[in-house]
Image (cartoon, rainbow, N blue to C red; front, side, top):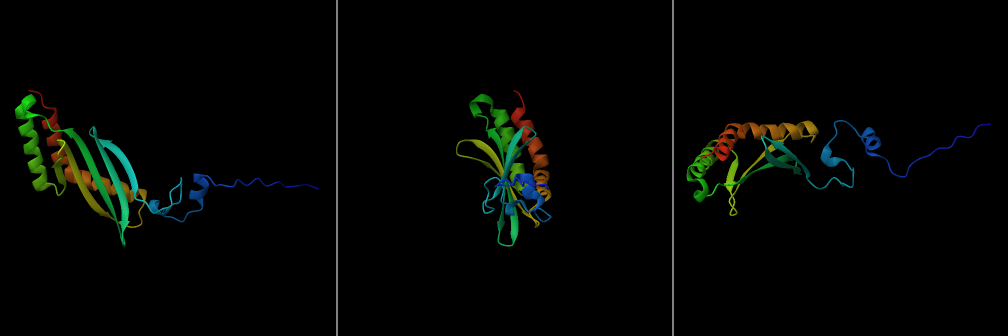
Length: 153
């Protein structure tokens, strides 16, 4: 006569939870790691040494990804007037042609912001595609701005 003992943990791990999910995985609908599925998804990455942050959330029947990039401080005129002018010219071109919001904050920090509608379901592929779409809009202006920020006198 054999006896079978079952050892069932009270909580399931992430892999076990994912294994029970229907595909495709909608990241904002998962109840993992303390998430209840109601707050926006957020992630960060660095592209060309510029830190970017993203937030994705549902707005009615659509999902929107908002991207923010932080380019650091606008050079002071007293430190390097030509470099400051080059940066301001790059920002003017970016504002006019990229479809993104390029701004200098009251603290003299340079930021870019943009958002894009994502297709549903809200999957990892949709998040990455949204971020890449926004970066592609910014790419020529990002290169010009970084060149201006790093030029030496």
